[in-house]
Length: 199
Image (cartoon, rainbow, N blue to C red; front, side, top):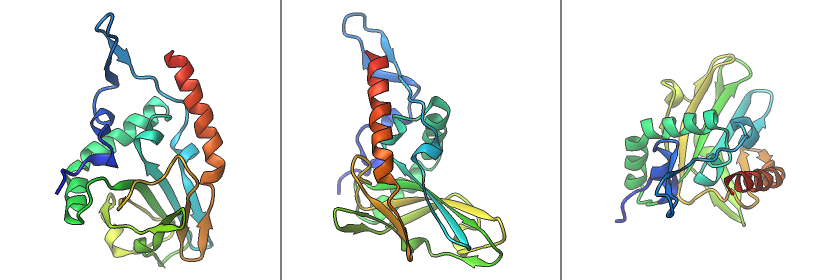
């Protein structure tokens, strides 16, 4: 079995390293400073909501972390680093070398709301991705029930990378979000700005 890599990409190690890029200027042999974006987590979050439950879905991918502002990017890097052993173990257990990852939160709009994390799916190009495993970030995540205004969070592992450079949908029961299609132009503009600053 191939070694399991965090974030589903070989470049994951750079996400967990210092803010200085591993790349070097061949002429000067000096480190090239990391160029951050300006986007917040809210700018890349997908939300599903009804009268009982709100779900917040943030894809965790090097292509997304690379456009976030420093604080947002480093916060997520720290989160992933702190759960790396659990993520790798869950992926290995499911026979996946390069899992897709998402940070997911469930927020109750009323008391006694139940939720089923296995119903949160990603659909792209006609293919449905269901969670292979979940690394809980909240002690009560496993209860699958929330009190009024209570929230729980977890890291969701999918068998393939989430296609953040293309259109995809996130769904839970009858709720479907197609927000990502509207986010793609924003991501492209931010990458262009980062590229211009880097040059």
